Image (tube, rainbow, N blue to C red; front, side, top):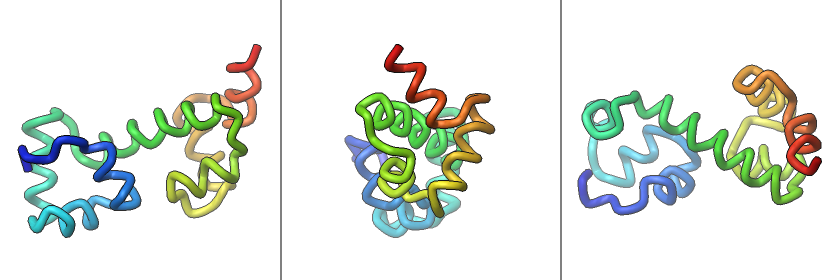
Length: 102
């Protein structure tokens, strides 16, 4: 696991799924959980969510639509992405995007 140089790229390639990360590394999900706890001091789910939302903000700031961002980050659909984004930041992705261009 220490040989992974780019966790962000691996997370994207694995569609932000912990089981897929484990499969691609040839280890168990539990091994991934232990590794993240030791290396990043968070569970993999928390790390993936933080990375996903950082990517969402970056893509929105580039002018991508909510639907494009939801698809790029493998959310179930745009409505769920909007719900999760608002729950995380207190504003909808559209509101955040509009404010980032002010």
